[in-house]
Image: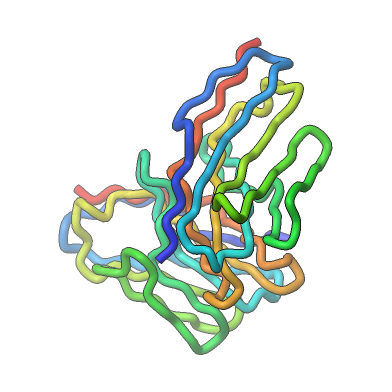
Length: 113
Length: 113
């Protein structure tokens, strides 16, 4: 099993550009999450989807939108990128079979110039 | 919301010695406490977790303890090896909140040969 797959792995954007980060899981998990990781700040929740068809804001949702396309896929969109969104983005999923422990993807390193 | 504090931020230990990382949480309703290990360039990986109905859990060289009264939990790594060098994150969540994890800021552990 691949687990959680994120694309792309690296991206450089100019201020004001838009892009979508893709995430897919093959573990049949109900819940999916997007976190950002910044030095000295741990991982902060951007948005999450507790089940297919639902999405909710996390701790730092401003400047982002999400779509739970189906049970497998959960995308994160930056409509107008800002330098403050330079970060490493992680997608994760969890389900009852994993005891609700998260499985993380390998991350997307985004730089906004 | 939940606030998780983690100490120390960096920890250097001699190979073979023990390492201890401590975390405190603010939400008395939190009932799930996982620990993640993140190696350079990779996503965090679950290494051990504990639920509020258990005071201690062991898995080979790692153990986690939980003190619900004091609202703190700790990770203990014994007989450290060079491959234990990584960033470690603690986290907390509660089942009534969709198991959304709140993370500590992380501890960079370096094992000296």
